[in-house]
Amino acid sequence: MTLKVIFFLSGFMLYFFTSHAQRSNDAGMWNTLTIQHPFTKKVNLVIDQEFRLRENYQRINLFYTNIGIDYKYSKFLKISPTYRAIQKKRLDGTYSHRHRLMLDVTLKKKLKKVTLSERIRYQAEVQDFYTSRKGKLVEQFLRFKTDVKYAATDKITPYYSIEFRYQIHAPRGDGPLYDNGFRRVRNVLGMEYEINKKNSVNVYYLYQTEFTISTPETIFILGIGYTLTI
Image 1 (cartoon, one colour):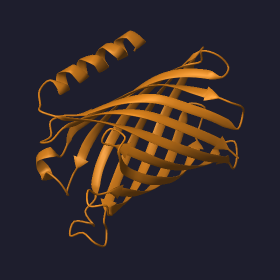
Image 2 (cartoon, helix red, strand yellow):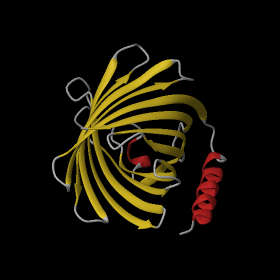
Image 3 (tube, rainbow, N blue to C red):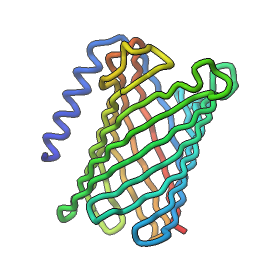
């Protein structure tokens, strides 16, 4: 699939989904610190700490911490199990505590200066496990992400990605009416800058829209990430 085809399809999908529902819009910012440590050539420990703002950068949305392992099964295949602890702020100022398990399978192919990758993620989450009547019900998704990177220089790598989220089961909200269907698309345009072998910066702009649900939302996100390898 060429870059032109990817951009055309993503644009068409966005137009189709955003033109058929009343929706709310919001802008925010995601800030991420990533620390990674290679145990071996194949196994890498990854810890993420992220802080998000919403409502036009004026209100805290959430904090989360990821603890995961990247296992490079081969040159083309990576498997990544991850646990995420989330503290999501409610409107009353309290926090909803959520626990998420993710399993990523990523296929990668390098074509000269262009790197193509496809990531499939299974995601299962519970929220307010001990304090909510539905706290033990598991929300499940599949997420499909296509990523295209171009090595412009030895240090600068612009990229584009598109991700579709498929809802398997949503027991806490709208119920089975929205089970088994695609409900969200996310487009990201960004650039990675390698400061040196141990430090890098990632700056991106994210456009996310929901569809075929009762209260769809479109968000515009400025993201900044810093990665430290120790």
